[in-house]
Amino acid sequence: MSADPGDEILVCAVKLGKNLCLYFEDDDELECDALCKERTLCRVLRNVNSQLLVVRPDLNLAAFEDVTDQEMQSGQGMHFTIHCYKTTTPGAGMPVAFSVQIENKSYYMCCEKERGEMIVRFKEGQVPKDIPGESNIIFFKKMFTSCCSRAFKFEYSLEEGMFLAFKEEGYLRKLILKKLSGKDGVDETTKISLSEFSQN
Image (tube, rainbow, N blue to C red):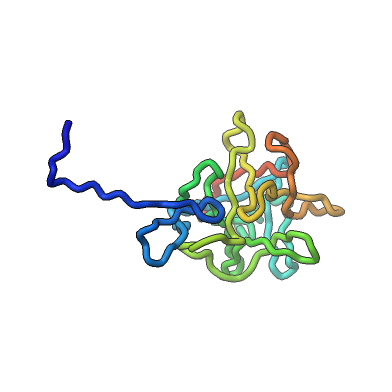
């Protein structure tokens, strides 16, 4: 099949910039591919012990806890919205952000460095529809293992090998960021299952 001489095929020169972001050479103001919100899911997050993640902003705490059916129905601090973003690098995993409603206020999950250690925080505010570049609220959702389709691990987008996990502190199983060594290591503390909940 031959192209008609009148048909034009436009070709744009591209280059890969910092962190493998795609840039178009013909653009006057070079801009990295942005993350655009594609859809949202409403879920509860469970650890390997079937405990639910509960956020308590007044205590500056997020931990996996045993929850009664009645407490789960109230949903205070445990019904999460998972914001899924479109990606140009699917190999890294699906970019997601987490938010939770508590007493008519919305809180989003982010990571911050404190005294040389990465800390998981929940701050009051909304998750943005578009994220123009790197962000401390984005995690890459990955399969926990190939044989476990309902369980995932969430890698912090700004630091490779750092995953959401839980750490036992006394009677608490606090939500933390944990550095995993080795690509194929299976660490049960990073295993998070997503379950639907009925909104009555």
